[in-house]
Each structure stands twice: as C-alpha cells, then as structure tokens.
Image (cartoon, rainbow, N blue to C red):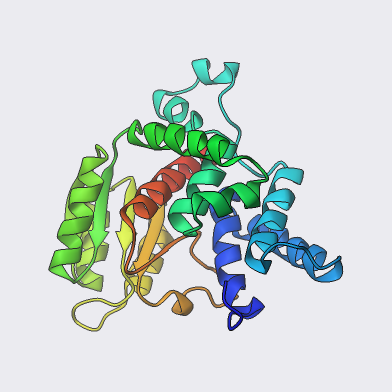
Length: 258
C-alpha cells in the first residue's frame, strides 16, 4: 500500500470482501464498520494499514460466526449441490478471496490470516480443487464486448457450467434470463446501445431470483454506499482466478439462502 492510498480508497474493497464472506450486505458492512473502529481507535499496528484493516475485518467476520459453515455430518443428508458447495471451508474461502479477488500476495494473505505461508498455500490449493468440483449450472452473460464475452464463456464452461445465452443490450439481457431461467448471471453495467446492465438486472430481479456477478471497469458506479448494492463485484481487467472464486461464492450463498 503506497503512502498516497487513503482509508477512503480502501473502504469499498473492504466492504466487497466482507460481503463476499458473509453473503450479506448488511452483515458485511457491520463487520467493516466495527473493524474500522477497532483499527482507528486502537494502538497503531506495526504492519501495513491495508493488512491491519483486512485482518480486523476477518476477526469481526469470525467473531460473528458470519462465515458460511464448512463440511459437517449434516452434509451427507443434504442435496448434492449443497454438499458440493459446503466443502469450501471458511478458511479456504478467506485465503482464496484474499489472493484472487483482493490481490494480496500469499505472504501478505498469511499476515492477514495470522498463519504461516505454507498453511495458506495449502488452503489455496485445496480451495482451487474444491472450486473446480462445483456442480454445473446454466449461465447468462450480459456483455457487449465480443472478446470479453468469449473469454468469460470459455472460463465459465471450463468450470463445467453451460452458457445458455450472451446478451449485448438491456432488452436482450432481460429476455435471455426470462426465457432460459439460469442459475447465475454475469453482467457488465455499460452495454452496446448505451443501455444499462444495472437496469437490466434490477428488472430481472423484480420477478426472478438469481445470483448476479457484476464485472465492470466502473466499480465506483456500484459501490456508492446506498442500497441496494451488488454482493458480488469484479473489476476489469479481471483475473481468471478472481472470476472462478466469485462464481463459487455466488453459487454457495444462493444455495445457502434457499
């Protein structure tokens, strides 16, 4: 973290991280608020501010028992999809999101989690295997750039999912979801004809409940502090591992909510 970075710059990313861990905007934001109060009101840590803030958020998430439950004897009695999603342990999710979505090095992720580098590396390897084993679902991609749409389709299908439609405009997006009823939507916010992916998603969610991952070059248009905000948000240019991790998170929380 450079000296030019400020707390204001970090807050949207802390909120994104906390919401991805908890599956709840309200609970995630509460963890961030408490974490900020702890860091700002306590003794100045002897570690970089970014690491201290993420460490504090993790502590709040764990203290509130907000991270989704891991495998248990209950898993053998649940539906196949829930069993497969439940194998992602809370610590594995934390490690994977810190590295893939928040772009920490493995060494810095180890500092955040207060673990050894070897232990975090092991968590990342296990999480990668678990993510690859997710149950397939139908996916609609809302993206007007052909090369990005092709790249996302290749990535999604490589995970074992099936892309049932690619939409380039707001109207196409609404029609695609209503006609195919997918299990997941990947959406840009700025579409081909000047229409809005956000408007398309809002219209879709009025009548059909589906997890949505926004993939955008303009995250500040979505992380405004007003409600509703997306739980799942990836910034362009994206990393492949970040998309894989967030797809797994979105499907996990959708199953848990249901």
